[in-house]
Length: 325
Image: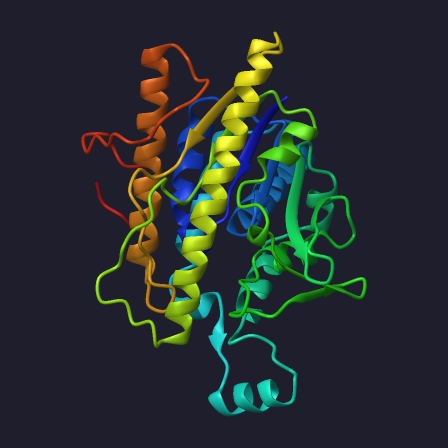
């Protein structure tokens, strides 16, 4: 089975969208799409879109599904207020003192945006197997649910809920947060469910950038920095485990393919200050990286593992709405 595995990365998920478009244009047709954090958001959109294709045409047009995902980002995610709003300092202080802390920001705009673009019938009847993962705060366990789960959308909210910045999501009297606390790239789950040909798209490079002049006294900036450090190590561990597993499987005579596509250099996007141009820039960068990875894999004649360390600025940009060539 072919699996598209989408890692977490907050608003850096725009890079992931560009890679997805390049991969789907190249003819990759996944049977499974699994995601965590922003990867869960992109997974859900693809599941919804393929469900729509099945209902209307009984056939999935994967390049079109990728373009619709790209358009969703370009049209709807243009500024921080599209995702969350900052809570008042007075209420934040009172809620903290009264043990009612509910996050520094209110993610209601993101939740409303997700809900607005989903159709429950399309999700339930999608022809692909799609899963999102979140962490149970009480038990510390990772939980994956499919689109057929009645609480699936709530798990997407939870998977996208950044610890400390956003509130935990209550589901069946249990609280859940970002799946990236345990796994950033849900590749183990995909392999356990039978994936043998995997394209893993990450938002974090193998290296961790060292920002100049970081204001560690800004609480949101500090939380994001700590999260970047943690997430970077977790995703590296996820990928190293996957590489080792695939190598052992091939040695045992059980063929597997793993293509890893992620940025060679750290991506930068200020969660507190970004605009539509920043989102478009990351989408274009992702598309370039995806095309380059595909070209190198074709040239090598082996897509077992793709390294995205080389950049070629001559690769054309995708057709991004509102952008000129």
